[in-house]
Each structure stands twice: as C-alpha cells, then as structure tokens.
Amino acid sequence: MAGEAMAGKRKQPGFAPAVVRRIHGKTQVAATGRRIRGKTRIARIAHSKAHFAQMRIHGKGGDPRRRSEFQPVNPFSEDKKGLAQLPEISRARMAMSPAVLGTMPCREQQQSELFNHLSAAIRQGGSKKVLYISGMPGTGKTASVLQVEAQLKQKFAFVHINAMCLGKPSAVFGEVWRQLREAGLAQERCSAAAAEKQVEGFFLHRATQQVVVLLIDELDCLATRNQAILYRILSLIMLPKPHLVMVAISNNIDLPERLLPKVSTRLGFDRVDFRTYTRDQIHEILRKRLEVYKALDTFTNDTLKYCAARVAGHSGDVRKALQLCKRALDVCRQLPVTIQDLRAADQDLLQANPCVKAVHGLSVKPRLFLLSLLLEMRDRQAEQVRARQVSLRYAKLTAARRRAAKELPDQYRSIRCADEALDLMDRLVACTLLTRNYMMLEEEDGLISKDPHLSLSSLELDDLSVALRDSETDPFLIELLPQ
Image (cartoon, rainbow, N blue to C red):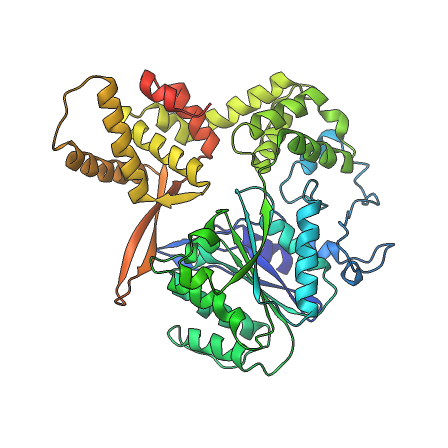
C-alpha cells in the first residue's frame, strides 16, 4: 500500500522529478524543484531512477563501478523474467518508451570522454577546468552524464542542480547548500541570503578530502546581464583546494565564447559536444531498442528509415521518433507497421493536439509572431528565447512583408509594431500556445529587473512548423517557413 501511495504521489503534476545522487558508493534519491508563480518547473530526464539502480546490479563482468574505462551496460543481455511471454506488440511498445532500460547507442564516444574526464578529476582530488557539455534538446546529454556517473568506481558526493527549477539565478547557492546538507557534508542551516558565503566557505575550508561532483543542468538559466552569478558559481573551482569537479550542461554550444572576459579568461573548459542525431543514428537507435526487446519484426526496415529521416530533417530529437513509433503501434491494424501507418500516426499526433487547431484558427499577425519565435529558437538552438529578440524579429518580418506588398512606408510603424508584439504575446500566452517565464537580471547597481523569455507550451518545434505550413496562405510567409 505504501508503494502504491508513493507511486500515486509521483504522478501528480505538482511534484518535480527524482534526481539520483551517489554518495559513498550508494544511491540516494531526492526530490528537487521549486515552485515558480504557482507552477513547478519540471526537469526532463530521459531515464527513470530504476535505470540507474539496475545498472548497479553485478553482472558477469563484476561491479561496473570498478572498471577502469567506460563500458556501456545492457541490463537486457539476459532475458528478463516474463519478457518472452509478452505479446510482440507489447514488447515493441516497451522498446519505444523513453525510460527504457539499457544502453544509449551512438553516444559511446561522448560517454567515454565524460568517463575519462570525471574519473581522472576525481582521482586527482578535483579539477580546475569546467566540463562543459552542449547540444540540442533530446540528444542525450543529461542521461549520458548520469549513466557515466553510475559507473564511476571512486567514492564521491554527487550534487545535481537543474537551474530551470530555480526561482532566480542567485538561488543556485541555496540549492547547493541544501543538497550538501542532505549528503551529510554540511550540518548547519542558513538563510538564502547567506547561502553563497556558506557554500564558498565550505569549499574554501574543506573538513574532508571527499570530492564533490557538482552537475549544473540548464546552465543558460544562470546567465544574467553582468554574468555575476555564473562567474561566482563557476569560480568555486578556482579556490585553493576545493576538491570539486564542476560539470555544466547547456543547450547553447557557444556559451563559453559569449561569457564576459572576466569570466572566460579565468576559467578553462573541457568540452564535450552532443551533435544532433543523424538519420542513420536515429535508425540505429530504433533498431537497437527493438532488438533488445526481441520485437524487430514489428516494423519494416523501410518504416524505421522513414521515421528516422522525418525526425532528423526537423529537430533531430530522438524522443520525437520514439513517440511517433509508439503511436504507429497504436493505430496500425496489423503487424508489421508500415510507412502508411507511420504517416497516419504523425497526422494523428498532430491533429490530436488542440494547440495545432488553435494555430489553424489564428489570423496573419499571430501566425507571423509564432513564425518569429520559431525562427529565433532555431537560430539560437534553444528551447526558450528572450521575448525582446522575438519582438525585434517580428518587427523586421513585418517591415519586409510590407515592402514585398509595396505598401507605403510608415514612420510610426515601428512604435505600433512594438505595441502589437506585446499584445500578441499576451494573447498567445493567454490561449496557452506560449509560456512566458521571467529571468531575474541583477544590474550592476544591485537592482533586480525581470527579463521575459518565451517558449512553446504544448507544441514541439517541428509540429509548430507543420501547423504553420498547413494553415499559411501568405506566399511571403510560406517562403520563410523551414522546409
């Protein structure tokens, strides 16, 4: 009964996901997350905690933590009890689940680099370089780090911070201190205002030699106008003997280059880039998952190739391919799943989303604003972008559209366009097509201002592109839409 109650609790939308933390070679699970204006920002982690617990099971090769090099673990090398008795279509559905247990194909090189850096840094008692991991969403960054962490043989404390869950950038120090206390490395409580001094004092006067691996996910969310928070949190590794290994994950490849000189000149970076999955890689991932579950015959090879090409041509997010295949299993009348079934599933997923219908019902100006957001997100390779940048792009597209229509110039058009953008933003947020979040900017004079950022609410980026293309009639806008 207690297990059922806990399972029900985790499914409630108000709870943040569990983060696996390894301390003294043991696994601990702690709930993280902060309520922000009545909502809880949820961090997406591709694998469940059961994945990492399963990885610690001793196999024929011994404890994976005691290996000197990274070796992907496949928990399904031996058939699980009852797996063979399940219907083939049920095994295929399990294979297409994002939380499937097993290895991550096509990421062996990145995982090897992560393993080598972390194992060497822990063995040396810390590192003076930040391990910077970058890549588009859905490329396996966080899952790879957590999988490598589960195989490291050394004893260390693992602290995982998701900056997207923080109410404001400066709250990162309070969250670090809270997790250090949970790990038993710090004792006393402290206020949010005193957390930064406490964290700095902890790493400055270490009472123990145990290494702390600090993983900061969604590092972009700590970026302020003067980059003070980023500078202070990353510069912890520059203390005399902090016994600290810093790992940062970001969707932006060029974030280190965009840091101010006072930050970039003092810090060194070891980089691991997660490129967007190619068509062949997505095809291999799908085949590997089906092979592991002995369900390869449920899809024709041409269907898997078509799915891989369709996803690679848009976002390259492997989670989209898994969702598409899983839906195709639901709509197909008989096995194996064909390309026609996959197309029907794609259309079904698109039409089942009420946000797609809402896009079809919009007039030209709201569609132009959504197109501005789409182009801005693609160019910056980010899941959320500054509202100001979207408004500026909207103004440029509006001016270009007027020139294409040979309309007379209007000297007050820029002012009206800015007001239009604010009004459109409010309307699209009100109808839940967009989500508006506020980043707290700390000015040089100490004042705090709000910087609005926009992201898609219930639509994927490539789904928005398809919805705009299906509903667009303006030749100028059709030409701007990504192919």
